[in-house]
Length: 552
Image 1 (cartoon, one colour):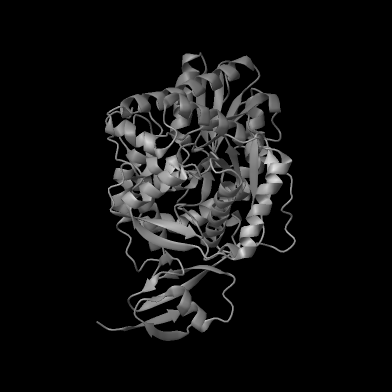
Image 2: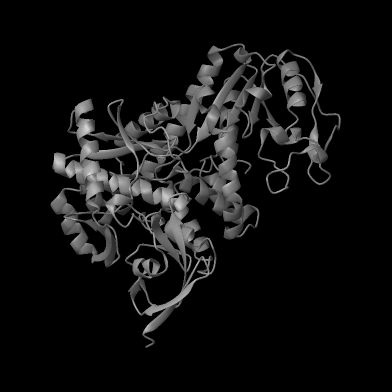
């Protein structure tokens, strides 16, 4: 066996090191200062500093000002919270409830949250940071991990390992403490530069720096009260009613052949919420249009059709309008920073025309609706006239539907605004919730592969711009919605798993997306597969896996 390996760094530097040299030692050999390097990307795989090099490798750095770096920073803060709580109260029962606007809200079931308690917790975290304790990732047997978690009272971790068929699992060790947070942690506690803890509602808010870790960033900012919190709490309580609060309990339902009951309960929750929305609309006689917005792969298409069914049963005649028909002429479409047409911005729409026609329709006037020809890049008028009759109601779905600039000429009393998104409430463990962004990406990946013939890498290519557009054009208007519809289904990961994992395996190590596909594949391994048979054909998840009764 060759006892030497070559390492090529992103700067172009190349060195030869001994077989099984740790990545951190190799980086130290070429860099004078590694204080801003949180981890490494070796051969397109995210690894810790103690990862051993066993073949010729390319090594890039993961720093604070990157998406991976930000996630590592966040997880490391959770490790510090875990360690500090163990110091302050051995039997602390923690639950990270929600992540909204970057800040992370958590509760401690058996503690009285006071300003003094929060200050003590923060000071203990700072003590650990100043001690510069190394954080070491190790592989241990699954049985040993269960014993360690039982010893420390981490019942949620024990539950998550209950159906794990792997012989080895990863754990992080920091001094006398150990845990795992489903992703990389920083090399040492001292890598945490800034954070804040605030007493908030009945728990504590962990406030992180902004994406760029700008100097002078105000960590003591006031938390934003958002309707998303309320929606999250409401659905979190429903998890307890169903009896599925974490992945372990979901897998138990699969093993015990009770998953059909879970599926029916989840779908009933969706149906009940849609009925409640229609009842609210009925109470407001002046409403002429329903505006539906949400990020990509939220299930807007299926939701709008299910809403239409309930509206029809109540005596309305829903008329669907697509915002896609109101794009500006191609030559007037704005360009992005790369000189390409930017179809995500609200300025890509003919705002004046949309405003005028919506206002006219709300006033009972007749308009000729445009049809946008995506081949020629121009609107056409083919004699499609519309005038709202007594029981007619417009249903308008689009990413910009909540932006007030589009309907500013229509009286607010004539509009009912809905924000839809999967707001995942299922725990992987007490410190980790299922990621709503991951849920949406997996939905889109499966749907795009089947219906649009997109490769997995094509979906990744588009995703960054999609997320960027959502942050700029959708999320700022969430609190203006009349209601929020949570399109998540707690059983969904087990269903989507059987469709997504084979697709994720198509991405080869040479791909720049290899690390992301591997993370998603490992994430889905937490769930036992669930057959699609019990999933009703009008379920939102059918929009993505197929065999539904609605248009996709």
